[in-house]
Image 1 (spheres, helix red, strand yellow):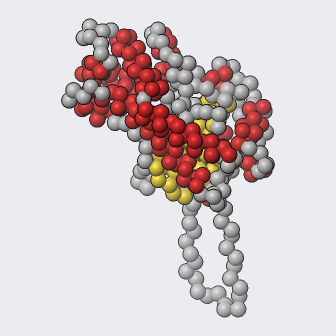
Image 2: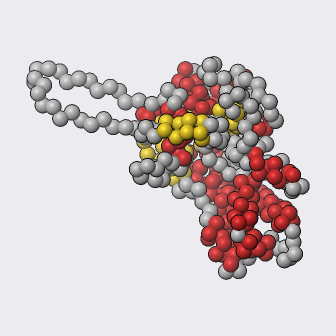
Length: 349
């Protein structure tokens, strides 16, 4: 992942009037607020008219919770891994093409996130109290992306079959199982991934020691999980868990307007939930984007609540703020790994 940052502050135009008497004191400028929430997301293309990026949608949810644009800092974090490149490398007979693709997809998430968090931690004057990252990666997501392409393109499926060492007569289920096993093996044992994970864990701990919360979207692999289970594919317990989740993060699942468990939730280690179904968003430039679904839009509700708590109780640690939100959550039907402690109680915070 590549990382760049920018403030989302809207600057006012300077006055062009020169009619003020010399004896009249100049009006004092309103103090500019410092950002309290950093958004790690995809903002490329935000400057293109008519284009609304994923990061802008997430930002729109934050702004709907009382935050102003001066309160938000954008940090570009770009996903890595190109399926077309994988296809070409497999077609060229590169036997390790699939392993390298998985390393890039998973390791790239760690590396991009680490670079973004380092930018925050290394700024000793930073006023950031909360990081929202409606991004992530899981073994299940990698599997979903590969099998989606394989279903549409038999040639790609056949190349994947060769990469996992199966004969031409192998069934679709055997190919999916072998892919799941390969993804899990690379995630757990690749030196490239392990090194990237260790660097991320170190900076994640430093972030927590600064009292900064790291709010993550749990992901939207519920339907993939249902399909995998129905097909009898065997996976590990963390197959659908966001790889960025650790003791220093707050993982957010989604619910609908009635407080019901959202269909896109998987057993992804959610710790709390918020509205993530049919979310209507007004972006900073006034674009109305309706009916967005996903934990991407639940996470910023929790991030906004965390930022309010941090402002009201600056002595609290990030973990203590998470505990307060979880303790006041409204119970929701669903597995703990899908909905966590329940629905964020917006009235409490």
